[in-house]
Length: 385
Image 1 (tube, rainbow, N blue to C red):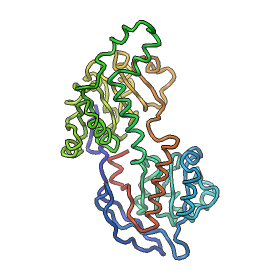
Image 2 (image 1 turned 60 degrees about the vertical axis):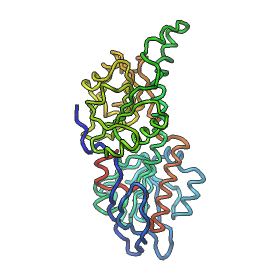
Image 3 (image 1 turned 90 degrees about the vertical axis):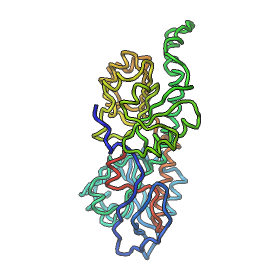
Image 4 (image 1 turned 180 degrees about the vertical axis):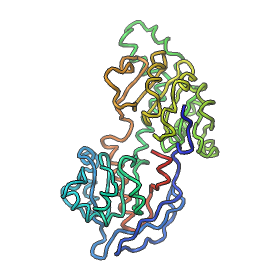
């Protein structure tokens, strides 16, 4: 097992690199501190003397644009920024994309945004901010972005909510083994003796192990404690033990937690240190009839080891896998004790517009000279997805 390193926790950001001022930029006036940001270096407004609205460009795949920017979001965008039609581009290499990059002061990004490497940034000399209307920025924000002092923000907090709700539902159903019994019903039909084959069907007095006291993990802990059903253990070597206890959980090591886990729910980021942190030894340490839930990243679990464990009886609810999707011949498809969903826990449909709304709020704050709500720094990317 690869140990969980201090990099595996998602914690609050304590500082953000300043954004380099443009020639016509006014300094930001002091503002009160923002939740989860204890100190933020001054961020320059992107407004100019000619227009208070910065020139913005949306960079995302067409599916993301259609899902996230309906009439209300587009109207708000037009009120806050100067934009051209079409609103977005999905690539940054063509002459037309490079022309639009040359004037862009703000990029609003989402799924499908290409990597913002040095070559792309050279074509965007006025760029001051990358406002991401989704969760992880790892796919497109490079070291070059931070080297140039460009502000980066994320809508990961908005994306956390549907994941937490999905995971809470999965935990509650796992207590009753409901999704697995639903599979059994198709086989055994009127012979209800199958109900006795899935272990205890209760949440009272059970133990839920949450790996990662992250945006999602910490919210899940609080919701579980509000229900006052189960005991909650948290595995996160860099989380503040006092904060974990204040949320109603007990901080423990992974080795201590696994033998006690009726439900094991994963919420660590995908980092080199967390890759395959759940392998054959960890799966073998789980009690009989335990349920593994993964709504985080498929790479946290060693898939061949998981296939063997599930073939031997481990229950699993998997919204993410490695690879994703699984190959057609994966044995996990055929097992009645395995539930596979196609990465739907995160924001989809109307949920996704909360993320674009958060990006637009960051844009509004930026143009008004207020500090960002959810800035990312080079350092913070070593600790979160």
